[in-house]
Length: 190
Ligand code: MN
Image 1 (cartoon, rainbow, N blue to C red):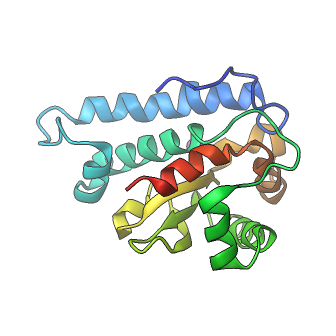
Image 2: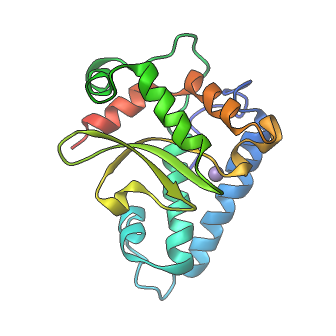
Image 3: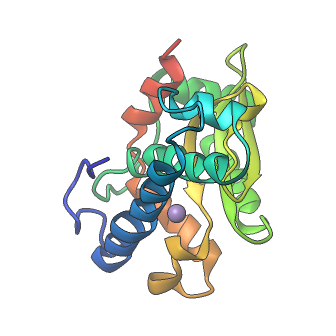
């Protein structure tokens, strides 16, 4: 996937350097790996979601990371002060977490306490109820029948150049660049 914004559009929350390595090297490697593994696998025509729910081993891991990063890179836009969700998604957050602040606290805590590499996710279940999960390595909530809405990448490659070991500071800063219109569209999609 091409980035939907310029390489420096997310500064200073995510630097041009981090974005360059993360999108241009890490994601590109997962794409190259998957393309090398697909021929003869039976998954040549499958969607990423189908692969992630049915495959194993290297095909699963690389497809999972591609799906995760497409959702991740596709959910940001330039820094906005006082950035908050609106509409049906905002109502669901207040309904299920009490307030946007309480939701952010729980999401950040789950991201900060995920041991090792992985992703923290906000998803919706089949009834539209919101769920926060920690997913290790390349896992994605679609594997649990959930609809993924928002994700923060807690692999060190996502933040180490900008924040070193300060993962919680990175997670706290990311709220300023979440494009809540994208997240709400994902929530409203059937
Ligand atoms: Mn990543």
